Image (cartoon, rainbow, N blue to C red; front, side):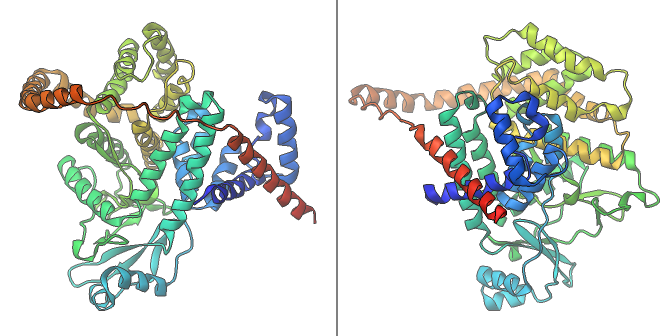
Length: 507
């Protein structure tokens, strides 16, 4: 995972993007300076005329680059402030399907995880793969006490991800080093968020723990069903859970069955997500149609808990208050919440930001439900990040991504779904608990407990303080230097790769 390996992989990625005309797309020619227009024209000659919208072409290219790039595209779908709403919408529909690996490899993975004899005992009747994605595939296994779903990681996927993520990290560091403007978007922090989420997905014990936690949360909220984990048959590269009988929402015509209440299902999707995120600070962070199953009794079951989103009290309050503010058209309060959370620099004007928020919220009222999109509100909200100096908040990336996904799934179920009406009961209940008498009493109790805990730690803090006074001052750390020529070196390598590829085409 050295420098040259990273740049070689970046050249491969850049070549694929150029072939699909997403480096300097023709649609944006009028906005580009002359040198960029010339470079874009040359790349389009090399590419041979890619078809579709820029976002569709980008999604198509990322799907072919591998699992790390598929996940990267899904996260980029949360950044309309960088790519625009249309591109973000196209990236949100990225597909994550690959051909399955062989049964021989699957059996070898089970033997490596549990031992050869134990694997035969634990997994006696493993079926052929029933679903395959970029990181793992799923098998069905009949058992006397009910069928199981057995998820097995792809052979060598951990090393493949590490190599691709190393290249992405280098690209992010290079970008921050050569572009002052890019630092506002925090490409390094953004890349680390992606890398952390992807690497957690390669330890299926973590997914099992997440599934078990979400099963408890959803049993309390009552909106979704989650399969029970079979801990005896679960390890680092294998996860086993009860088989959910039903039909994925991706199946054509699944919602046309008699007795299906589309409005209730759509409301369950929206309210279930908000209830877990706002009330418990945890949520399923990959809620696309492929991970939602319609059960025979008309309920929604969720699977694939490789990515679990978590938000703290500040983020939960932020989410609840901005949604409540839009519901009540209280734009000043929404603006104040952004400032209180530190999402907008204090040198900006609360009044000016509230004015911008009004331009987002007011056009929503009085319009048909199918035209009132929470996703569109979020996309426009983040479009203002540049104007008001808002920096990317890595802790909100998963939340933004999932909220757009949730609305997409709800609208797929019920095209007339009013996500604001569905959200109101959950948000109103949270506001009442946290800002009414009950919330005030809890706040006092929490503050008393915090003060008590701090007083208990006071002697230890004073001891550390006295030791620090006696210690010699530490030498200042060496000043980090960034050599800009690495950025240009990488660019030259990328252009050289494109040139070699173009010569190959010509011959």
